[in-house]
Amino acid sequence: MNTLMRQVTCLLAALCLTSCSSRQGSATLPPDLKQKVDALLVRTEEDRALANISGAAGWTLIHSADPNEMKKWEPFFEQFGKAGKARQTGDYSGFEALGGARGVEDKFAEMLSSSDGFVRGFGAVMLGVCGDANYVPQVAKLLSEKPREEGGFDLGCAAMGLGLLNAQQHKAAIAALLKDPRSHVAGRAALGLGFMKAKEYSGEVAGLLTKQLDGGHTQSNALMALAEMDARDQVGQIVRMLDPNNASDVDTPDLAALVLARLEAKEYAGQIAVLLGDQYRAGSAALALAVMKSSKHGPDIARLLKSPNSLVRQAAALALGVLGARISIRDVAALLNDKEAFVRPSAAAALLLMDAKQYSPGVVAQLKDSSHLATEFDWNPVLAEESQRQFAIAKQRLDLWQKDIVATRPSGAATKGHSD
Figure 1 (cartoon, rainbow, N blue to C red):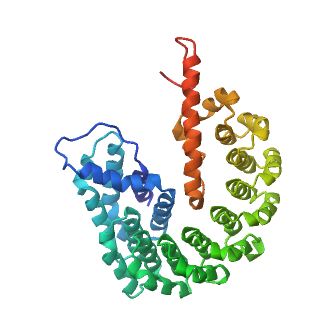
Figure 2: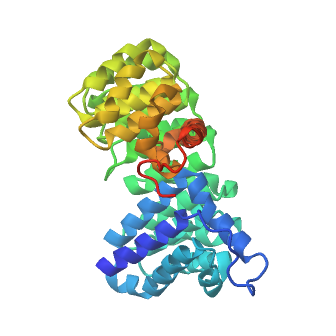
Figure 3: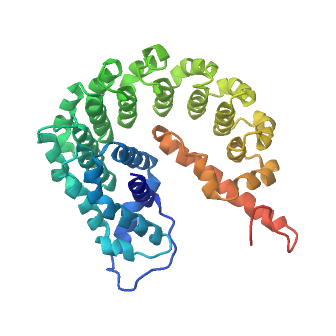
């Protein structure tokens, strides 16, 4: 399975690889092949939620599918991974051999007929990620087929895939799955409705927060669905999930805080701030409060910069950056020399957001380029829109600071960590 794991990982990585050269590759390529392949792959870079969805689907496929069935798909995974790597240099011949974007999607559609439910589910999710509504009828067939030995895993994935494809005509059928006693069916059905922005079902989805189902992640899926629905009418139910005693999923309180931030439920900032005293949840709470622009809690977050927990220090620095808490600039700058290496670039990103240009040499030394900076804004997908907004601000400043440093550099000198 090690070879297979590498191949599936390559496939998922290729879906996220969008930084290709300006070279055109083969002159004999069909005129629209490059455009359509780029359109297919760029989706996962522009939407971190899609990247997480495809990654989770791949993880389940690797760990749960029948190895004998998976052998049938090894050539496709391997070919796709190689095509994705070649594309980075402007070579699209690998995708031409696959039949372009449509050829890739057709392969995912073939998986819907697999004898293995995990393969079928993966195919359904990936078609949703690809976003071509022409495949809705094929994915929808999984809703009506008799559940097989895997207990309906593909059923929940079909609901997700249809949600991603915005198949409004199947809303009622997906909503009916919310009553399924299996978490992997009901929770994924909630996500499907969330992707459709089907707010009329927010009450039923919120009901999953207190429903005991077989399996886990029901609360997490329900919370993410409510965020996608912009279900402000359910904030009362979401706030209850801040209490660990009401959580059946370990990450429920953290996610509830982030969802409340996305819904701009600022009136609950006080309840979220209680989590700042929990070393395992303080980071999520700090980020949620920062996104809410709750400057009132800035001093509480600043105290976390001295936490013995390095993850908390990291999160506190970023949160103060998002808040624009310039009063804490010196304390955040001190983390440029933190004993834990992964904390330092987070402090640098925070200083960019604070526009603390006096620390530009140290910031540039830590981040080097925008790819390093992007890692600091790889937040929970619930806050994808806000993270991209903050990243854009930080990137613009990083580019300017780098130019200023180059402009003031003595002739012939090289910046540490760079090669000319």
